[in-house]
Length: 194
Image 1 (tube, rainbow, N blue to C red):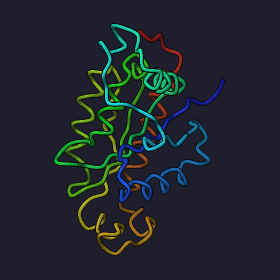
Image 2: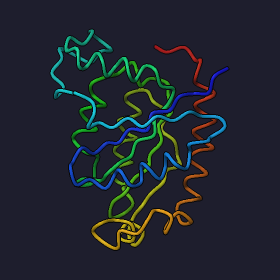
Image 3: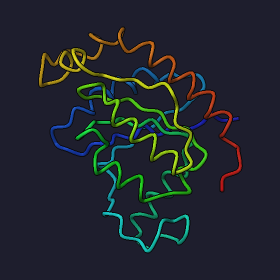
């Protein structure tokens, strides 16, 4: 049986985003994961229009071929890790739009978060979890939060140190998240989808 496939979705598209640094650190960390296969999915590389369909694809097939291509891409994954920037106590507009472009493809799959911001992106992760529930995902309890002094240590706004400078602070959240993600991804991989 093949390992569950997990998309690591970078949710910020700004030219000056910080997301690339923690995303690459995470991808390096999970490169040889025994139970899960990870693929980086950058929203910058997805040609997504603003959501403008008649309805969610739960109710009516999407007409825009770009939305359909996104849905087909998502359908090939068994779970998701979102790299989450906190903008005004929530997720980015680009990530919200990407979430809205699909419905069935998110269903009954686990979602985790690697977040950053003033309080470790915690408020954005809470918003993301609410959206995930509506999309019938399984939001995980554990997440990786880069906030406060750790964020200023590795951010270009501060010392711009390598992620290794703070990874001992992130290890507990990372281990808990990966254990939980492995459990749910394996459990739900072959579960019937709506």
